[in-house]
Image (cartoon, rainbow, N blue to C red; front, side, top):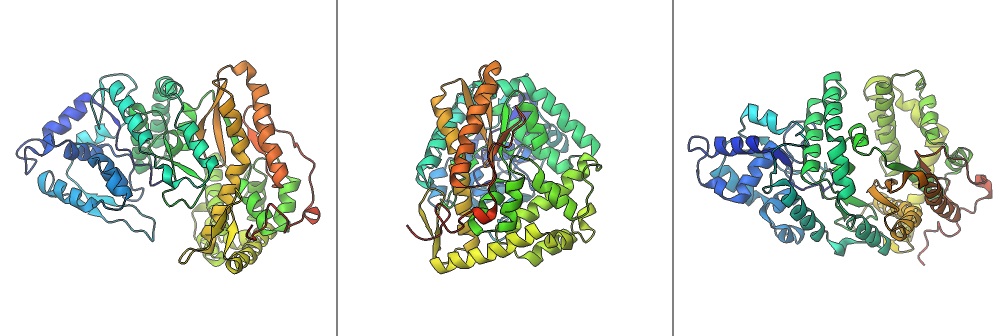
Length: 511
């Protein structure tokens, strides 16, 4: 979960909210009958019933400090590291629920704080964790009436985006653009498609495509979208990446199949195998570069090659199995690129689920493309270590500071390049008025809403053309594709032997 995906606001049926308050406000249920008069304690109680995020292993709510600080209205203290979440949790335990227990966060495992035990009425809990209807007598868990709470909550989220962590002007412009979008497109998407998305989530649960904990997480996100449909983005808190992250649960954090229901009518854009293409060129991985150049514009070519290397018949496999295998291979590919030891990845694949777990990790690691990436990664890491840093995606110097891993510096570089390749689309969107808007940002792609769908083809060509010219200019074998049109192979391919590997803009030498 992104550290900024912390908004505790969600929609709830008024009668469910009132029943929860009535149940826990009695003298028998609560040590302090006046506790729920405190809006902080009431908001935490409602959050536990309808959390923004849950632990996928235990099904219990996640309670990171960012969420607790939002509930208490102490975000400023939390950002300045003067907030003590434990004090609030102990107060809740003493005044509302003596059975309340939690598991502390684990920075090493990147595991946020989560609830271990809390008192809840099972019927009310089940009702609170179902997707709410898009119409009906709904209230927000952090406020009252839906419409008024939406506007107040949206403004509060946007006001709290910490501008001091923006690493580059392009990141600032992206945040300013996305966080300034009008709410009407998102409100309409939720209003028109929420019931359909609810039915899909229920059918996926019944079919076994969603685990119960995953269904609860999806329902919590969908209910948060009813309360606040507009996504708000924020920069990395440590300013160590050009990537931006959703601050509240919503479309960017919702499971893909369900999110697609809300995104009907929008154009989806994707920078094909962006991180692999960037890293292959930056690191001088000639086998990978040659493959990507021969298949530039072929969305899925990389995964097809990986399927074939492990003997997986993806064309005849059912969709569920294909998704499971791709998920494991994708995790392995990006883990390798971001510094995980090759033997560790091999063991993880060999011990994986289903087809991949049948000792396929050895075959994957023996793929010449994968072996080439690993060798190039290690050579490049040695150069970064020797140089004391690397040039970032926007020409800035990224120093290898004491205690920082080389892989972290390398990933900051590649993520900056990724945004620089997509920046021409942002510049077009800023100048487009309301003819079209980028409405969803996904790191290596985005969604576009067109005011006039009859003109979408021409605008689509302009958007892809601007980004693809930038990819060509910087020398990365990737293109921007869209689901509006089959994408031709737009550029002449250059073989790796013709590419000057040490030349700008891919040098790691300080400027």
